[in-house]
Length: 185
Image (tube, rainbow, N blue to C red; front, side, top):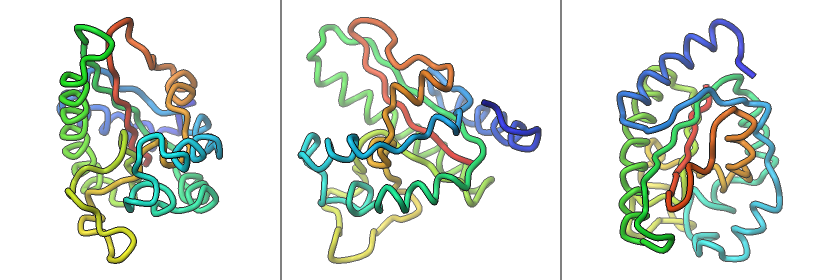
């Protein structure tokens, strides 16, 4: 659902910036689709990506679902951005990692620009933060709080559901990989 005229103008500006950053797919985020699910956080806690408890942008460092829900509920607009790459086979890790890096580099540019234009915006990235080789969590504050963002998954979001409910694809065909992030405004 697209928000009021003011939010639509802001979303259009963000979409323009996202397209300039090079994302293959961009769209308006349906903020009603942002349903934070404990079962997604449970996957984090089970060690699926091995970052749980090791990073400020991953659970529990990024905050409880209640805290995140309170934070997210203040936003009425936003955009989704995606980077998609074709794979030679389903297990081509080199291309997957290169696509992830490309997506994170693009998202760093977009989130920096978004924060300048919309200081209260909330970027949510794809996957765990990779800015520092070793995170300071939990002993010291994050070195780069203006560049480090929780992932959509860390916030308890099912990416496929968010994309579907926002009118965007999640899967772009066989032997492709897609990374998805969003910016709330």
